[in-house]
Image 1 (cartoon, rainbow, N blue to C red):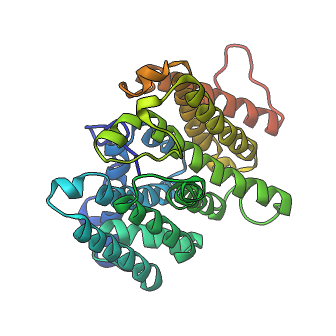
Image 2 (cartoon, helix red, strand yellow):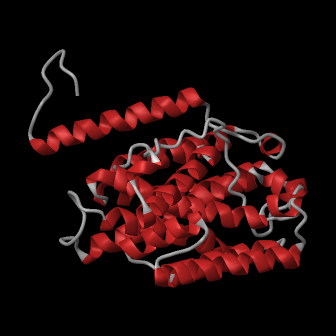
Length: 329
């Protein structure tokens, strides 16, 4: 699935209430929330940074989705193999994870804290197996499929990334707040759905691009149809970068339609991956297959500041206020 990202060793999850504050199911829910929060902050500096701009209740939902996706990914992307699982046993583990997820979405409980948190989100924001089944289908493909044609690649990206975007969209739209709930036109709804799918696809394809050599040499996979790392050239790189940019452009059209409580976080995630795609574009093709491109922390901070400033300017314009000279936003 090639979701490897920079690790954040600090694992800066939000603070956890002392156990004496909650008991029973409330304590278990809080523990499951905390477990999911640790996953996103340990595995992804980019998504972890963007998620900090979300309102607390929405951030919990996104952390729950990310955590389950990451745990499933670890079954197929190396850690399970390092632990000694062969392909058949990994498939069994993945099947059991899917079964546990579907059961938990129905009954509201799992002994796996990550699954439990994910199921709570699914039940609260309104999605079910129609989104998780395509996801697990793509995960299973990683166990046996090493190359893709156009059709299988489209199906893989749909399940591994686009439906994850739809899960997140459900979390954004189901949370109370300005821009959420009723009142959206059918055309706006279509733009939001297309944007969520496109942003998920862009994230996935960028990760495929930055992990070309690792996917080929370590996992034996070639995701992009007809692309061979041994003959990877500038024309091929430019074509793939342009495809990602088209997805990013489609996603950008949806961001203004998102609820205010989620807009900045999505804008930052979009900006981070747009910057990464641009850095890939500027990197020679032969360098790209030997060097994993990343966005430096200082640049991430600058992008975050820019998104926050733009958001505050929009908020002032929407409220009809202006900032006094020397004042603060």
